[in-house]
Image (spheres, rainbow, N blue to C red):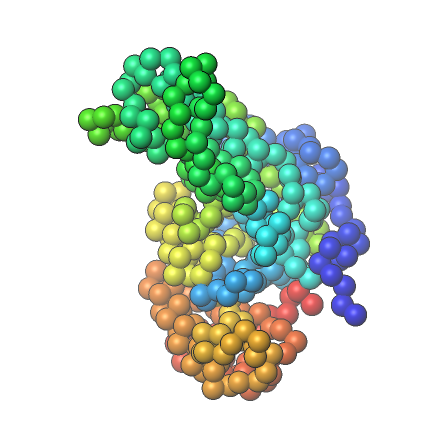
Length: 411
């Protein structure tokens, strides 16, 4: 019987994080330790790298995904390990997992099988506390808003038009819409309020686009928290919130370093959702990795029509990044689903459905190639895939100018 992801992760022979850092020539004293296998990289060291030449950036994206995902994270880890194994100094960059999906249907975000990042349980749970810091910074602003309204509302903020929401890193349905400030005169003015999940916060998106602490502070100051009765925007800087919020985030802003199961370096930092933000790990982590490695493999959330578009249009433009290649992850089961096969029949061979579903793959290839980067298709193989089905995918990819490779890095 095959081992589960958690069994594989618990059997991992991890190296001390200082040894992992040495593979990227990071001096041990420049690592800020969170135990023996997790660390942050000091900003003093990051600033010293600014004149180094960047490595090559490779994006991992996917076809339109099914609910369980198609394997972008495992492919990112697998490609990183593969490049290292053939002697190319490579680092991977991933987003930090959110507790909401971890305790939901989708599960963790540390890869799977033998293509994982470790310590897996730590990464999937509290990790280095970055999400806690982001949540506290977000909720400090919420507290300042209600406190301002309570103490006279000098800015004339309309309590019906407060757009800023509180956050918690959990799928807590009961908190989605609430009434706050109950309890009479002592507790202020009751109003409708809402909770989002931490990764959906604007603070998370800003955190992952910021270049440094000053940039972070300036961006936080521009947050619109609500409107006056005359429909004029009120910003975080009007409440003098940007400084305190940035101070809460100063340690979290340093990128995290861990390792794959093959002891190769992995940067895991930030994690905005792609459906409401840009769905990429932090700019700071990616740019640091590019200074330290010859190749950097990163992923963007959801399918290429969402995550890859935002990666190119937002992250790359903002950070001045130029990817050298893109990998589109596809699975036979997803292509069958796009071809009309029901969920309970996905394990049965259906070449015609795969061919129909390949229209989805073809459009994604066309879209990604329009950004001017070469495209490779990684067919994330499952045990029930047949040769005929795999050949149908390869034929489609070839017809649209993308080489298709069968990937079994997780096995």
